[in-house]
Image 1 (cartoon, rainbow, N blue to C red):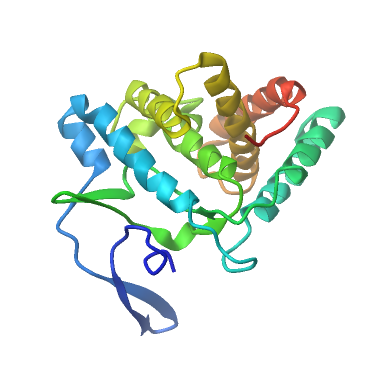
Image 2 (cartoon, rainbow, N blue to C red):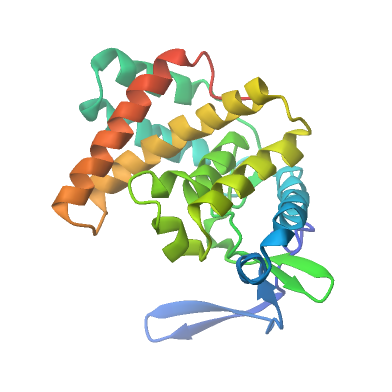
Length: 244
């Protein structure tokens, strides 16, 4: 669907079945991920952030029909409702209300947008790993991007190194460059407001993931859960809206 609608991605041309499982067959790319390019040359960060935003805007400008892809807002409301058992009552209720009040838009979302999923083949940039494609307000995309570059490393700053191969400082710089180029501003207050909104949604997702799926030690999970609870307790009362 993304390819047909003009999103630059690897060409899909078959679906195969192996036993009870299914697989998608794509063209063979002779390409390097933005992560590998950045690891090889740190000076490319600004250029790669600009190119990343170009593709991101192409995705978000693709408007779908109702029901064409999974609804990210419906998923996010589940995260928020799960969080209520772990947050002060008034914070939990406000989080759910804020999530429900995010406008129902029909923008295409990638859902797992980061430098390992953007490839450069000669002079062309392509997007891969389209299995998380969904639809909804772009703030949900920014929540996932925030987690990839910053949020998942809130307890252990080495996480981004293990995940993307870059330092925490590079991840944070790439995140802030993404905001700057996407929104076309360097106004600190504006960008901080968007970051906080993305963080609220991101930490709601991370809280639920920590409780339900995290494979780390119990001590680490407890610290991560505590961090998410504190972040949401601090940020949610400041929010009038989670959209932009």
